[in-house]
Length: 92
Image 1 (spheres, rainbow, N blue to C red):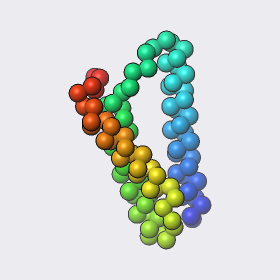
Image 2: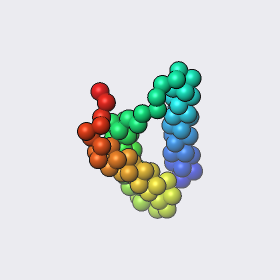
Image 3: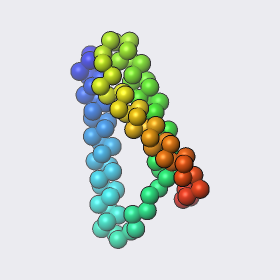
Image 4: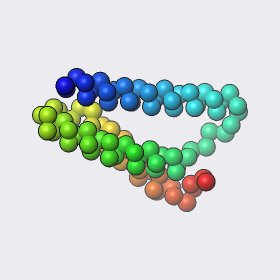
């Protein structure tokens, strides 16, 4: 059960990374300027923070160390803060 949770979380992170690489390659191929989407960072933070809290709660109940949940929480919180800090630069 523990390995299933860890592998599922790892698979989600890998898929998200692959999507980000594909989007970056597409933008580079089209010659689009790589402008930071602060609204996208905020939305990503909103998605990752609750997921990581649920992950940490589940790991607490199953008495598993927070190897996956805590770094995801920190990442999501960082993106959330960066997105909110630059709210005036959001693109529609």
